[in-house]
Length: 187
Image (cartoon, rainbow, N blue to C red):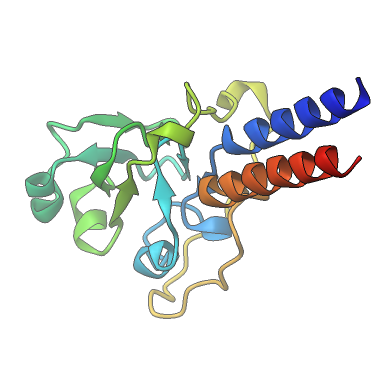
């Protein structure tokens, strides 16, 4: 009976670890702002279906997910989705290229835009991506004031996330199950 319990517990732990998404705060501590080096922020990150992008910004900005053509032309009128409330969460619900711009054309032309490639690992994605709390449910944290240091961004800090990504979680499940099976056969 104890063997069965341990087996089910390790299987359950592995499943919990695979059903997590990463929540990325765009621009980290600098936020969604004209002074943020967004291309550096995106570099080195791996986005997967189920992850969430959280945009935190002042009333001078907005965020729009747009098509490739709209991205190239900084055109936000036919956005896939958009937000203006200062705290917008956009779940990455499908694989492929995703494009984000500030709705203020001069900000977009000034570099306030980025694109991400979303991997389609849907088998290990949660059913519904987690959403950030509504802005009226929390005390907003003030973002740093914009600066003129466009070429000297704030030091990057890691975005909030989880201990394991999907591929690592599958390894945890596999080795947990293998260890449990080997342990059960030895006793």
